[in-house]
Image (cartoon, rainbow over all chains, first blue to last red; front, top):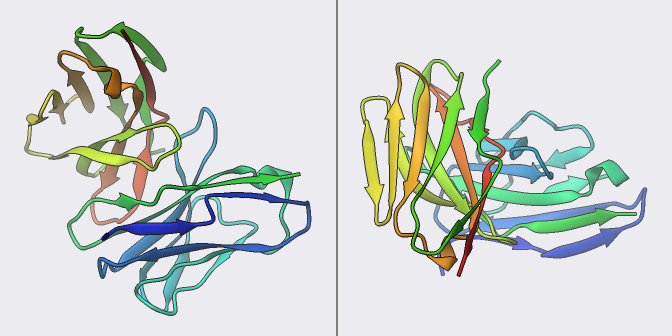
Length: 111
Length: 112
């Protein structure tokens, strides 16, 4: 099925651990982005990419790295997890003139 | 500062009733405004997309309105169903940018 696939759906990390949240889309969309969603706040942009090999910072990039080696994949890396990174993370993609398609989210807890 | 504010924060209605959700924004220049529905534990799904020149757009029982002069939008849900229970998020996209400005959402609960 066409869409945005995120893995894992749930993850618990200890403070200081690292991990990668995976995101893949099969719609040949140029634009991909990562958001975090916290209670009482709108989705906030972490990083985005307008095409393979091109990434840029969003509103809340600290503590996160991204890369875009292919059009399909846009992984998000947490280098040293902190409790403040406990959140629900959404990956989204869009083509030119199209709206976002969101993944189903990854619920991350850092203890 | 570009902002999107939604009201009410939460709303409880009985099945079959209508309701209206509000969205005020300060994003300028403005490209388009979107309403998303987010079920618990899922990613947001687009309901409507409205450009600067559009006043009303419908998607089944959902009707969105836009007043670009007052920078206000509303989402009207007709004959609510239990499956309408979700968060509804207003999103504004500025001109010449991929970046979306998200509201905090209205959490709607429809009771039988």
